[in-house]
Image 1: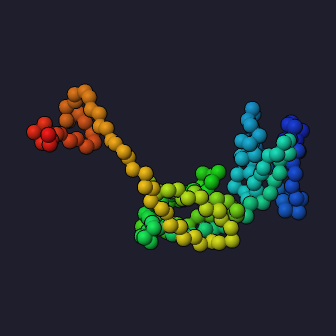
Image 2 (image 1 turned 30 degrees about the vertical axis):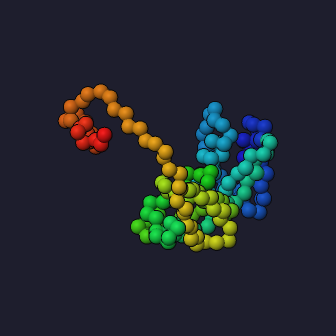
Length: 171
């Protein structure tokens, strides 16, 4: 931390009783943003940071194990719903029973989403087990227009092919 303070305008703020200041960590960086340097330096620890003006505030991140189930409005489990911790790359999907388990920092927000349903943001507080009921997204497409052009041989195509003859369409 002293080297970072010497080479930048930033000053570290932290509780000396919470951190082992005798633990040495060495990284080699050149021409990187302060956030990237701190991410690399603190990787694999339970220490997080917040940058405010020219101060870097270090704090211990309390991580909770969260479990839960995601259902639709009728109580049926939703398979493959996405659960993401906002502001991170941490996330999971629900299993065949709509259940999930993940570790998330205390006081974080979970984003729960699934195609055809309205996404929900859920603040993690004291609870460690969540029951989440997603509501269907009732936005309907007013009109779908299919446009086709060009000529290709069937053997060169991948995907679904449909043929409609004029005699098959109602007049």
